[in-house]
Image 1 (spheres, helix red, strand yellow):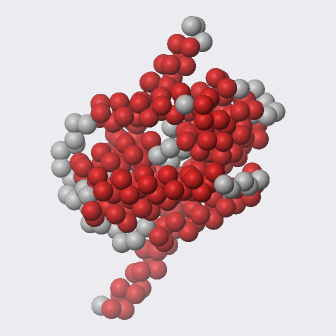
Image 2: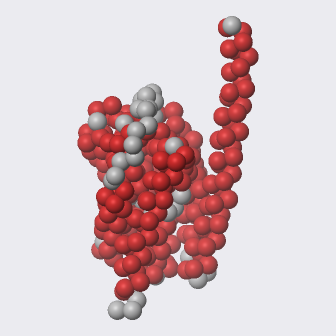
Image 3: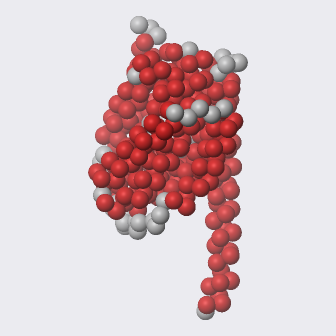
Length: 271
């Protein structure tokens, strides 16, 4: 019982609190920043931690390697949602979840060494932005929706379901479903209803930039869990992910400045 209660509280409280923080960040700084933050391992990280504490380090190391590959399924989810966003939230979410399920089925039949999987995911992340299609227009900002408690409840239920099913699913499927689109489903679905398809797609686009750090987190975690204590493995993996997250943000900001500077001479010529 003493061991069970802290794990239950971790499942029920940590993910909803993180969802609340990302939601508030989106309302303050916009969907791009919210997406970038939500792609950090703030949901799957706690899920993998619970799996490690309940099932052991070796089990979690295998799960983390498969969570890395599951980034591909999340990208498929995101692209499908973006392509269908104009149809409304229910249809877009249905299409995205079906696409995600198909991608997971495909990944079940694929076995890649850790570094080959990392290279595959980095390549997929680099190519994903071109597949999102045209960006829907963003609606004018209105009053913030009063749906934060529902977002937190949905996040808690999804996280609880994945971690509780881990022993039955096994390490491979547990790793894949640790990357279940909890943040995408909750944040994008509620944001689409509250702020329109433009906000939802911008959120998904922002997530793509954040998944580079997530991929690094999974690789480092999978390597260290077999050689270091669980706490050390998670701390080092999180530290490496944070460095990559900040580096990618810096690069994206610089690229935006370069693009803006390149457009100025062209505009002057038209004038």
